[in-house]
Structure formats: C-alpha cells, structure tokens
Length: 539
Image 1 (cartoon, rainbow, N blue to C red):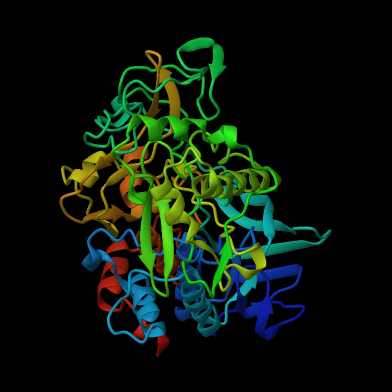
Image 2: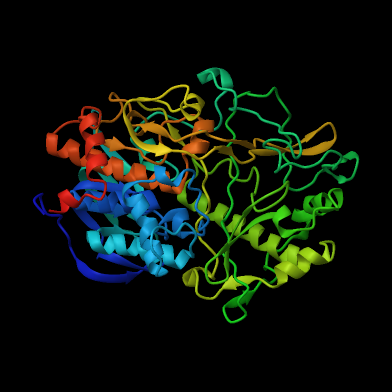
C-alpha cells in the first residue's frame, strides 16, 4: 500500500476466534495506531466499507464494540428485505452473488443461513487483509475544531486501551455511537408531521386488518389483569401512555426483535425448552389475542415464518403479539454498553420464552403447538452463543441531522436529489412503537407500511455531518433522515451500498486533501457508476 503503514504491536495473518466465526483478517492488539480510515461498527455496512477502503489503497481499521461481525445480515436476517433488487449495486450486490456461490448457484441468492452469510463476510475481511478489533468500545474522541484527530477505545473485560489517529472516520454502528461522541447533531424518535411537512410520521394508530393494521389487536381485547377492571392494573407489555392526535411527534423508537433461525431437521435440532427465567404471565396478551381471533390458527398469523436453505428459518414479527418486544427498547440508543447487554439478555429471555410458550402452553391451540414443537435451535448455528443469535434487530436508534435530511417526500418521488450515491426502494416501514390502552382496549401504536413506487436516490449530504460539526466523518447507517423515510432506507442491502459509497468518498477526501463536505460529488457518482467493483482501483 502506498500510504503510511499502521504501527502494529502484533500482526497475525491468520484466523482468530472471537464472536460469530473465526474472523479472517489481521488480528489486532491494544496499542496506538495511525491509519487512513477507521471504521466503527462491524455491521454489514462496516465490513463492506472496510473492504472498499482497502481496495482503494488505504490502511484500514475495523473496530466492533460487540462480539458479532456482519450485524443483521449474518445475525438471522436471511429473508432479504431487498425492495427492487436491480437498485442494489456494487459490493452489496456482490455479497448476494457470493452467497449464491456458497450454495453452488449462479446469479444472486437472497435467502441464506447465518453461517453462510458469516463465511462471506469473512471472505471480504480476508481478501482486504482488514485489521479487526472485537469487543472494543469507544470511550473518548479528541477534536481540533471540526476535525476528529484521535479516538480512544477500551477493550471489554481488559484494562487496556486502543488509541487511533485516523484521517477519516466512518460510523457504521446501528446506534451512531461515534457520531454522537463527535458532537454531531442527531434525533431519536418520531418527528411531528409538521416538522418536514410529512403525513406518516409521529403517532399512528392503525385499524385492525386495514392498511398498516396487520400488527394490531382487534377491538374488545381487555388490557387489564382482570378483564374489564382498570383497578387491577395493566397486563405485562402495556405502557401507561395515552393516545394523542395522529402525526404528533415524540421520542419513541420502533420495536426491536431477533430474527430467529430454527430448524426442523431432527439430526440438527436442539429442542425448545423452558428457559430458566420463564414467566408465562408475559404472554397473557397472546392468550387473549388467540381467543379474540379463533379463525386464525396458522403459524403465519403470529410469525413471519420464512424458510431458508437446509430446513432452516428466518422468523420475524407478525400480528398483534409476536417477537417484537414493544416498548422495551426505548432507552437503547443512549444506553451504555453494559446496559445494552442487559437489554439483549432480557430480549433473548422474552423470545425464547415466547417460543416455549407457543410449543408447550395448553392455552395455545393444538395446531400451533404441534407445528412449533417440530422446530428447534440449529446445532450448526451460533455455536458460541448457545445456538441463538446475539444480534438484536436494532431497527432505528439515533439519526443524524446532517447537511441534508431525507424525508417522506424523497420516498414518494415528490423531491429528488441530484447528489445520490445509492438507491432505496423498500416501502416506508415502521414497526409498532408502543402498546397502550385505548377506550378500555389494548392497541398497538406506530405501525406504518406504505409502498414506495420506484427506487429513489439517497443524498450524499445525508451521510455527511454539517461542516461546522465534523469534517472527517461519514455516517452511512444512522444517516440524516426523518423517522418515516428511515423506515424505507434502513435495509441491509442499502446500508452496504452506503458503506461502500462512504468509503470511496473518504478515499477521495484523503487523496484530494479535502473535507468530506468538499469532495467532488459528481466525481464520486461517476466512480460508483463506472467502477462499482473497484476493478480499476485494484490495478
């Protein structure tokens, strides 16, 4: 490489065990590092950004605060939310092509097992010879004016520090942790519709089984411990919040869950058993939902049960009560790493308890119990994590308020930007944000599902902070967007596209000795069009 070498105390060009797989890259140890591009967050976007940066001839550090590489892409989301597949370009598209090759198929494969996705992410790290830190968490940033000059990280469970001086930083975390430390403006929650002249933001109370209401309770389901008696208190999972006018802004965040990988292969199946901390009262609302809709007895009325290769699943939320732990994630974005770890444990307990409840509780109809009994946790997935994904589906956390804010108007095509560096095409999709009592009935609040007619460009300015706040940081995941527009943009293929675009932009900034706000965006667009796999950069 033509740039200054990274000072390494130890460099091992081999595989090392930590997290989801043997991470193929350069194993790193605590110390001081000088690099061209530092990427925080080992999500799919982070891996693609790191690989892209290396292909462009930069020295690169990839720092993951947790113990998992690949984010949701390797963490169970095998049923790809692709929207218009032709809008997926560059190394993002190549990821799905590489998945297909693992299955000895041609073209792209959009459904896959977690272990296969992990193997592909490993290949990117190995080919890019990426230096990777795991369980290394940001503790402090030093800035000179609007320029980040140094980042300090602590190793989880160790009294050791990693100090990084980098020309450019890219925040690829789902939470925007580095962005926040850098003093960049951001928002958490749902803007009032009046803020950007939108129609789908803020408080939303969809009607049962009408548009956006397929994750709603029917009328008549009591929210109280003793049905019909408010004095008995609310059931578990219902907040004390009140209904407000549609479109009213707040700080609520859409629900998280786990994308669950199960198998019905007897040879590969670990039975679903009663968790040690099981509490059946958590699922009382589900009992009432089952009673309220007696005609709905298919597993797909209560889960999105998507089949994956080799007799596995990607199970997602569906209906009034499912895998989404509504309301339990409201403090996630600003929580410390220890607090988030506790929330993950709580989420796993809820989810494993839900699966056990559905397979064992006699109040669940036989058709559902008998179906789920045939499934279990795969022996060949998540071996270091008791065969259950450690990756929480963080659908939304902080969102930057950057040089340009993407809104509903971009999604509908009413407004089109000229500085697009990737396309989004998925519908405007928000999961429920709250579960409340309305007129003596339980209701979920916040779900929105509105189709997007055609792919639309995502502005380069939306991954760029305001110049007065930071000049050497790009944010391709927690980008500058309203809540409802983020619901369309926030898909894993799009994050990978934006991760690549951010890394190429950072490379241009280094080469031209400019801030990220000053680069030639038209030149970046041309580069993305003409060399999406960086074949010329390789030469």
